[in-house]
Image (cartoon, rainbow, N blue to C red):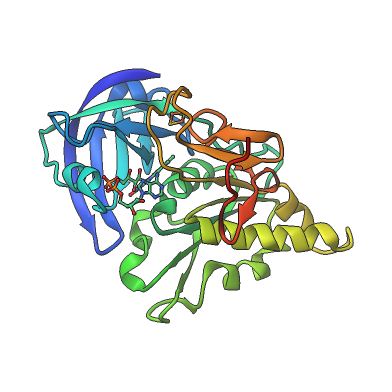
Length: 274
Ligand SMILES: Cc1cc2nc3c(=O)[nH]c(=O)nc-3n(C[C@H](O)[C@H](O)[C@H](O)COP(=O)(O)OP(=O)(O)OC[C@H]3O[C@@H](n4cnc5c(N)ncnc54)[C@H](O)[C@@H]3O)c2cc1C
Ligand code: FES
């Protein structure tokens, strides 16, 4: 993990999904992996005080550039999304765990919701030269989808929208079942209700016969989760969630977990135990 002053190279608004920020930060870029994140200082003074975590949406070791996608939700996101070419950005990273793609996986299935596209896009870029990759992305409408032309052409891109404005009418979990039999491995990132819905599919698969096609893919699925953070260095415990192994810090033991280890409660992370 290093502290690095990045230099903003370019920014671009992607409809209602967020703002893509390309940052030159060769130190962090040389160590970053899909699923990990940077803790970004959201201002030059002390308000807002806390850094904000953002997943890598692109990692280019050759140019030393990183890409983030930032929703201008509150004061931190607004300030970061408002940076322009040439501005400095104070970054701490790379932080957390990363996705592990098995060498033996021929067919990799990626599932993204909202800005959960970030680590899925990095995986698609890194893996599509080595194996077949299908990416399913869901959004409220066409305005919340990642643009197809910004993905490698080798990637099969399936989209779902809740209002039916593009792709499959529904949610990612409506499109997912038909790809499970094809896939050798599943990785997902998105809002908690989406991950909880995939978690319910996994529970059903666990109860089903071992002959069910796609069962092993659900049982072995990996997910990246988001949680409110303070230090992002494992000290403050602001980011704790409940797993089968007890409480886990999303910033240290995560953000990538085995789907089967994470406990959900009503579509959200389970309440933190003692
Ligand atoms: C590992 C990780 C990776 C992330 N990657 C991205 C990303 O690629 N793009 C992106 O836009 N956002 C990402 N986030 C979420 C992002 O960090 C928060 O949205 C951001 O901190 C909000 O700051 P703010 O000042 O803009 O809004 P605030 O005013 O702090 O919050 C605005 C709203 O967002 C909620 N919120 C704040 N932080 C989180 C959080 N960590 N998880 C869920 N809800 C939160 C608040 O409850 C509030 O409703 C990630 C979070 C984590 C933990
Ligand atoms: S954010 Fe402080 S322990 Fe994870």
